[in-house]
Image (cartoon, rainbow, N blue to C red; front, side, top):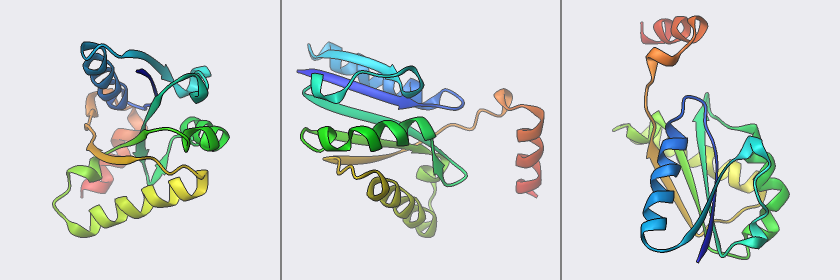
Length: 144
């Protein structure tokens, strides 16, 4: 099987998750192409299945993935696919946070027209050491 994995990442966690998926698929003897959505990934019609990994920040998914999915949703809907939503909210124990996450994901998929076979909510990572001054400042304010 030929698998395309397209992702967008901010701090690198979504890329790590998609690389893990790629490595597992290769060990199972699948042909895999991993592509950053910012770097003009291949068209889904060339593959048997597609996985899309995207990170959620401030209740928004990455523009590059939204554009890719929106432009390719008709072809994506013709084959097995998984949407991997990566966020800190996925690790929450609060039912309200998880419901909000599902709502945001559903709105994204409705907006782009994609109906993936599977939707996976995966916990992201807090990479405080990689944040710039402004992001660290905002995180400090939010934690008070």
